[in-house]
Length: 221
Image (cartoon, rainbow, N blue to C red):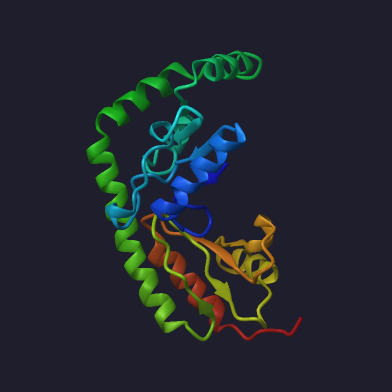
């Protein structure tokens, strides 16, 4: 399974790496599941990879309405594959869990998909504007954060300076300011990183809260 654009880093693999992964899975006789929930939010459209389902009969695309399409409340997603036997088995398994989705949510999803150009344009405009705000923030806060600019999606994975423990920092931040960052430990990542989301219109207010928290005196651990 791969995820591109990647959560939490915003990384997008280059085409050669992607093709190599597809080939390795084929050689192994394995299915490759490509999580594409942030597809269409690449900051350079030239970085957009082919959809997994178009890469081979052994490749499966996973999509949802909750990320690029910004309709998380609908709780609708899909698998796309050329392997009809696989899809039959997946559908049969699903019958043991949820059977079917909410009909109103399905109808609203269809409306959103038919208006995809308008919906995705709104999402791209929002994350592009917010990414510029983050670029400025991390340029000013180079004493506290190391920022590797994401190439797609609405999330990034900056690293805190070594004397600020990410888990403690995030816990204190949400208590003091109501601003939620996710420490890298939640991803089993050994570095002192935090995930920051920038897919919301209130990012400037959240950053203001982060600035206030950074200005508070720190008590040594």
